[in-house]
Amino acid sequence: MTPPARIAALVMGDPQADRVVPPTGWPARLTVFTAGAMAFLAVFALALSLAAGRVADIWADALARTATIRVSAPTDELALQTRAVLEVLGQTPGVASARALTAEEQRDLLEPWFGDGLPLDDLPIPQLVEVTATDEGYDAEGLRQRLTAEAPGAVLDDHGRWRRPLVAAASRLRLMGWAALLLILGATAAMIALAAGSALAANEQVIRTLRLVGAKDGYIAQAFIRRFTLRALGGAVIGMALGMAAVALMPGAGAGEGFLTGIRFRGFEWFLPLAIPALAALVGYLATRAAARDTLRGMR
Amino acid sequence: MIELREAGYSFGGEPLLGGLALTLAPGSFHFLTGPSGAGKTTLLRLCYADLLPTVGEIELFGQSTATMSRDDISGARQRIGVVHQDCQFLDHLSVTDNIALPLAVSGRDVDAHRENLRELLAWVGLGPRADALPPELSGGERQRAALARAVIMDPDLILADEPTGNVDWEMSMRLLTLLAELNRMGKTILVATHDLGLIRAAKAQVSARVLRIAGGQLQLAGADL
Ligand SMILES: Nc1ncnc2c1ncn2[C@@H]1O[C@H](COP(=O)(O)OP(=O)(O)OP(=O)(O)O)[C@@H](O)[C@H]1O
Ligand SMILES: [Mg+2]
Image 1 (cartoon, each protein chain N blue to C red):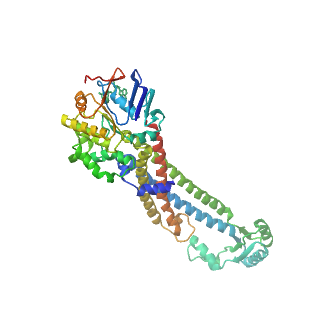
Image 2 (image 1 turned 135 degrees about the horizontal axis):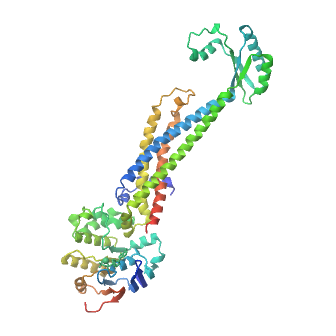
Image 3 (image 1 turned 45 degrees about the vertical axis):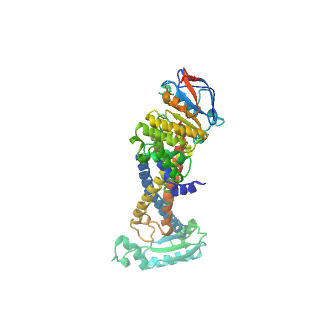
C-alpha cells in the first residue's frame, strides 16, 4: 500500500487497535496544536506565494509590453513635437501602436495626486504618449536616439527602471512563499516525530507488555501512527479553516494589481489549501512511523 | 516444543544458571521448583525468548532463540500462553480486554470470541469483575485473569510462573484441574511453583515430571515429593 492508502485505511480503520495504548496526554495535544498552527501559517504562505506570483506576472507582462513617452516642451511647440514623436513611432519596427493620451486621460492620471479641480489647461504639463510593443519588441536605445534628434523634448520611459526590481522582488517573494511552505512541513514533521518519540518512550512498560503477549512491532507502531496521524489531520483541518477564514476576511480591492489587497485566493485557488490537511496527515504518518521504528528498535 | 542445550544465563556477575539441558516434548507436563531466587522465573523468560541464553542454546519451535528476529519472537509468543509472575496487565484496559489482548494484537476478531471470553471469565470466577481494571483486583483475581489470558489463544505450550501464588486452596485445585485438562487435550505445560502441596495434588491428575533448580543446575526431583 502507498502511504496515502495506508493513511486512508488508518483513518477508516479499527479504533480498537489504538486503545491498547493509553491516552498519550501532552504529546498528542501538542501534535494537534502544532499541526493547527502550522496549517494556519501554511495557508498564509500559500496565499502569499500565489499573490506574489500574480503580481509578478502582471507586472512582468506590463513591463514587456508597454512604455510611455513624455514630451515636455513649451506650449506652442508641444503639439508639433508630439506629432513628430508619433511619426517616429509609426516608422519604428516592433511598435504595435502608439497613442497620445487625451487631456481627460491625463487629468484622470493626475487627479489621485493633486485632487480634482486641477487647472490643467493653465499648467505646462507634459504630453504622454502610450506605446505598445509587439511581441518581438523594439530597440529602445535606437528609439531613444531618434527621438533626441526629431523631438528633443521627448523622453522614453519604458517603465523598466522602476518595475524591473519590483518584478524581481515579487518573483523572489513567490519563491520565499514556497520555501516557507517547505519549512513549515519540515518543522511539523520534526515536532510530530519528537512528540511521538516521547509518547513511545513514556509507554515503555505498555510496549513491553504488548510484546510479551505476542504483539509485533508493526502492530505497536500502528497504534501510535494512527493516533498521531489523526491528531495531525484534525489539527490541520482546524488550522486551515481558521487560516482560510482569515484570508477571506482580508480586505480586497477587486482585480487590481495591488499586492496587499490581492492576498485573497481567486477562483480555484480556494481549493488549494484543502491539500494542507492531507499533507499534514502524510507528514504525521511518515514522522510517527520513523519515530516508532527508531524507538522500538532501541527497546529490547 | 522447547529444547535447552547446555544453556546458561548470567545477569552480569556470577552465572545464575548453567549447563541446563531439558526437552519439553509435545504433550508433556513439567513442574519447576526450587527456592526463591533460584532462577525459576529466569528459566521461563529464557523459554519465551524474553532473555537470550548467555551460553549454550535454546530452541523454540525448532529455531534457536538467538537467531530469531523480533517478529519471529512475537510470532512464537502467539503460540505460547504465559502466566507471568507479575501478571503484565495493561492498567487502562478492563479485565476482559486484558484477557482478549493476545487475540487483538495477533489481528483476530475479538468480537467473534465474546462468548468464549465470557465462559473463560466465569470459569476462573471473574464473571462479576469483567469490567474492573487490573489495579482494582486482588492478587488472586489477578492470577486467575492471567491464567485466562494464557489460554485464550488455545496455545500449544503453556508456561505458568507461580500461577497459584496468591489463590486459596480451592482455587488452586481448580486451576490445576484446568491445566491437567489442557494437558490431556495435548498441550505442553510447564509450571514453576514452590508450592509442594500443589505438586503432590497434581500427581492424582496427571503424570508430571518434577524439576528442581538448585545451585544453578536442573535436577530431576525424586519420588520423595
Ligand atoms: N533483571 C535482573 N537483574 C539482575 N538480577 C536479577 C534480575 N532479575 C532477577 N535477578 C536475580 O536473579 C535471581 C533469580 O531470580 P528469579 O526471579 O529467576 O528467581 P525465582 O526462582 O523466580 O524466585 P521466586 O521464587 O522468588 O519468584 C535472583 O537472585 C534475582 O535477584
Ligand atoms: Mg519467580
